[in-house]
Image (cartoon, rainbow, N blue to C red; front, side, top):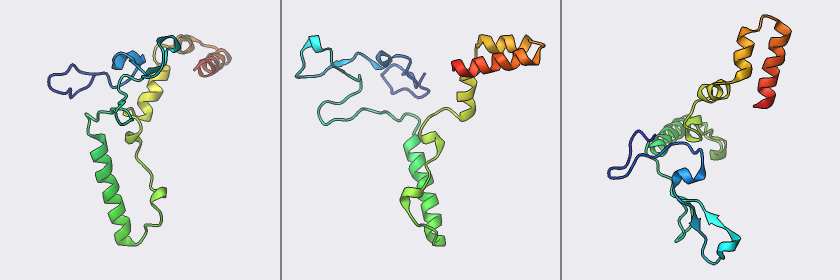
Length: 134
């Protein structure tokens, strides 16, 4: 759940299990109901785009970090191209690489069998089956 909900509004999930987690799908004007063309719940029809709340203030942190890096490179005369500036991982996803890896190995029946298997060949087979099915 959102750690900093907007006052007066219910907290929102920071991840999506189903698109309807963000509200009801919107009808797209100009199409008949039989065509069943829907818009994302946060889509803005007036001027396009999606409403993307930034409750964790990730974007201001990113801009600040980027400005510091650019200023440092400009002062040293090392700035060659803005397109080669890397963006930090937190701007793309709120989970770390370790947390994502943890999700792929949680509650996995092959891993549970693997831990209790004494034969190394069978352990390798179970490990391979786990990663093939992921």
